[in-house]
Length: 121
Image (tube, rainbow, N blue to C red; front, top):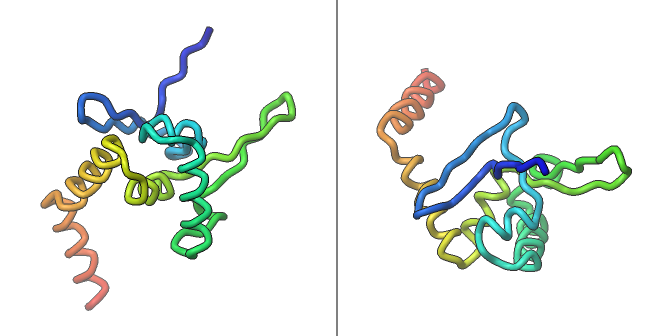
């Protein structure tokens, strides 16, 4: 049996992302497993995010079709991040903190500031 690695894992309060060439995409059951919540909660929150217009379906959702004719929807890292801010679990909280910590890394803030300065000139 072939064992597949999850693109995102949360273990020992640490987040690990293993992006592929196509980015990071997870199914609803994978997202539910990641954040230790029910699949129904993931689906309901995806519908709510879509309905609000915060994220567009065409940017955050893809359909993967298998050779046997079956298909599954997968969701982008942007949707996964939005869900982390809507779901209430220990794992979602760890993911939120991880995202925020990365957003305030001095090198990233400096690069963003430089990009804005260049646009102003």
